[in-house]
Length: 409
Image (cartoon, rainbow, N blue to C red; front, side, top):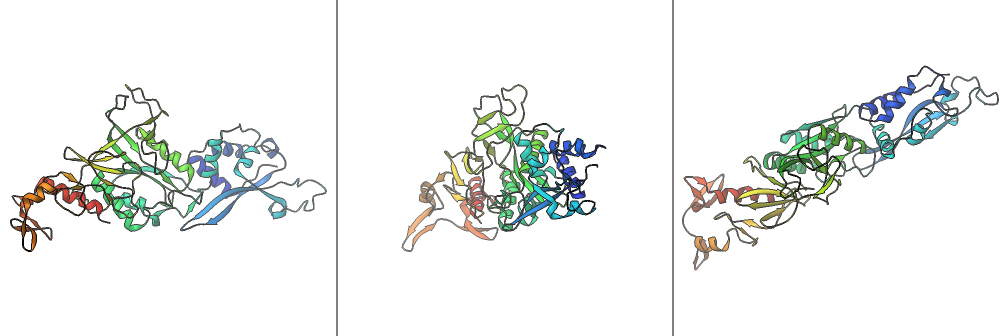
């Protein structure tokens, strides 16, 4: 008797192979052999299929795939259902098994590393080809963040994608606005055949890495990777490597923001693929005027600072810091304020201007302090005219306006 496998099992194996599982490819090759099942499989196992084990979660279902097969000797004269063509389908004649047990039934397959076994167990849960693409622009980032676009299934109840604090529409909007229109970042997105999002990671290019010791002035890196299925993480890492992105986060968490792993070995450097490093990193912000409001919760470049009049995103805290982006409300937490008169930082949240500018701009009256000079309207609001030159905001005031958008939810 030849090996018999259900169409769903074959489909899941084919897609798992397409999605990078070497074990799935090996099993498919065994299934195609025109030999008796006993030359391929140990024991009396045959009539293989898959079964879905479901757990309902908040907004998605955890689906775990187990394998099922008939494990009876159908030719045994004492077998109660002997000669019944439906015998292999009766539940009492079948047994469920974990993916690792199913793999080990095949006689001709080698011992696989645990990492490959785990990849197979995760990949078999998605009966679809998964594609990973690097995208840019507010619309693409928003779609990748909006939880309504996520896969309805995951392989674990702790799915980092489905539990992301930025998955709600209003927060996804702020994240997309910030990354596309303030930070100039791109995004790596994994989707299934139905266009559901299975994974996402912000991609940073031209990141400065001062004093790294490897001869690197700038690097590119993938931020924390969020995924519905564990195998998607490796697919995204492989695509990042193919695209020439140099670094990835060592840990997919909200901490360890300065620990990375090299994806390749650039010529002329001492950096080797797989090498781990700790590094302070800086992104020079273009500060596009189209940024309207808000920031996301940021796993890596969580500190916004100003140095020499330029805005920076950092993966560490230090001098010149304006805001921390570790707020799940869709806006930043203020650390310092930018004076709109001179551009200096000050830490008085109750005052707009720094002390020197306040002394020069305000005068005391019997009714309290008032601003000297005239006022003018700008974009529907009224400001002191001293903040304008030839009808346009002076540079410190422009920076102030840009920074204030960070604190708007």
